[in-house]
Length: 253
Image 1 (cartoon, rainbow, N blue to C red):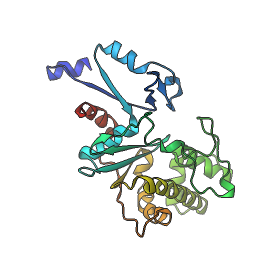
Image 2 (tube, rainbow, N blue to C red):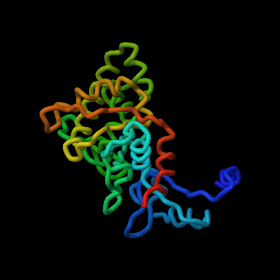
Image 3 (spheres, rainbow, N blue to C red):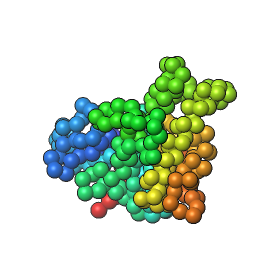
Image 4 (tube, rainbow, N blue to C red):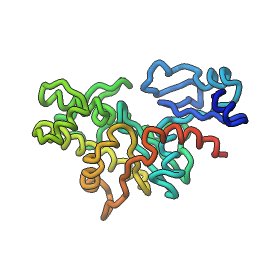
């Protein structure tokens, strides 16, 4: 920060995108999958260390803000941004600003249960939050690999499953089909509540074109409407989108 300010010749503002949120009740971190942050006064510690105010926001909300301002959802009123990577989360931007909610949990999609679970999906894998069957346990990169291992007995990675899919492996094709089906159900659940103008997908799995290509037909059957044509797009700014959104936090009143 000091190096950047020296180059710019002025004093900058500091925005931070982080897992979880700052509790409005205690001022401490909650809900972070980087669990060592939970219960800690992260915001106060940073402000003290940097000797200035710091604005913090959930990293998925930062992604949504970045993409709503000048990304894949530029100019659209309601942008729902999903992170599909090591973990699963989402954020909402309304008119270019993060929707945090009364208790700072708006957009906490990854820790909702998988909608319409089938018998073989109950109770679902254990989640670090203490529940079973959270969307994160089905839709993250590690979850893709874990589902493949449960069905085939082969220990692998999400990247390897995608590579095997492209090579025509039938087990990988079946695993990917299950993944898309679950992702479609999960997305439709939010579409029915939020009816966003665009769905932006970030995280490592957003770079798998087969996911984006196959999603609309998997979402549509579960949407309570006569049609589903909401655009589903990869984030325009890729891995940089979250930090760009953090910088945009200072544009809010």
